Image (cartoon, rainbow, N blue to C red; front, side, top):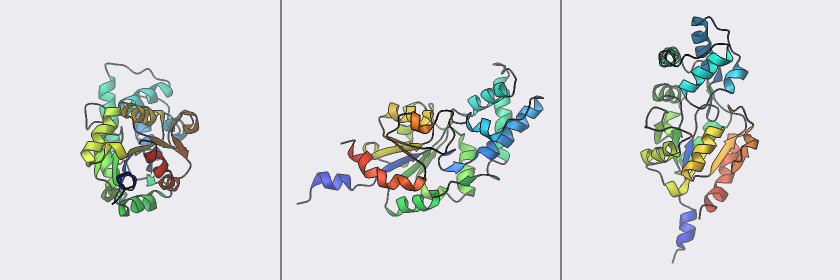
Length: 234
């Protein structure tokens, strides 16, 4: 007779993965689009180093923080119009200078061969998220992609993660979040899901200081951590 506990430990995992700063290095395209918006407002351009620290809370915060970082004062009444202008600029070309991080493709292929359920959970809007994943040949690995405007909530609300798990047909009891920022960590804690942070992503505070269940410097390190993270949920 088989051991149901052992069978459970061998079951496929559900891996919920952030996009910007985790799967794909998108900061060059984000910076280009933001600087085009800032130029239209007669504000100074921002460096990629600065923009890296602004990414993660969604496009509205990126635009507001970007204007402030460039020396402007975000006008609450004008902000929705500026956010839409940024979206229009970015969505025309979100991928020319973006690429998967080292080890991402090989790791996704490994997980797919091991029949894990993979999904993207990002605060980036749905349209550019889908375009980036398609053009970088990443889309076939994922059962679902949940952009920041797909549901009524988004990270750091844990509902974004739980809704993504459901959309992917995954198992919430076998789920792990993989991200790069406090936004991802807070969402995972809210959803009661273990979290792995990569330390190469977009965050103002070092990933090692955020209190994740694990921190890695390469995507390829994550598979070896999964058994321990999933066993801790029993």
